[in-house]
Image 1: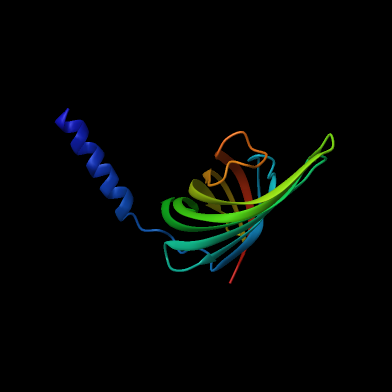
Image 2: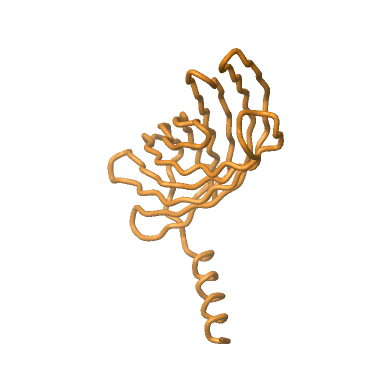
Length: 163
């Protein structure tokens, strides 16, 4: 048991001491997922250093029953796995607005949320980045179209990198 615990601590130490490759100064693209109908987001990443960045996403929904938007901001720490592969984790939050109209019943409101983020990405030799991540979101109001105050958002991102 002691060997397993020691191995886990060593592995965690190696992960946090791993050097990240230089991340792109800017990346712009789409983040496509499905969290309560926010299927698409315009995504912008701004490199802040060798291993951290800021991500800002604008998501929208336009359907027969619900129209909504949300703005999310997240801070990421980025670690290199091998070559162009990186993994990242971060935290942030955001706000949004929604309007529900179905069967003559109409309602609208705003919401705030806190979010975590964990994912993996690949940076190609050309200025292209592809990512897969999970962003659990905790909403601070319960009077909207959702059934609960939690939304797990899994998405595929594709971004153009530039300096």
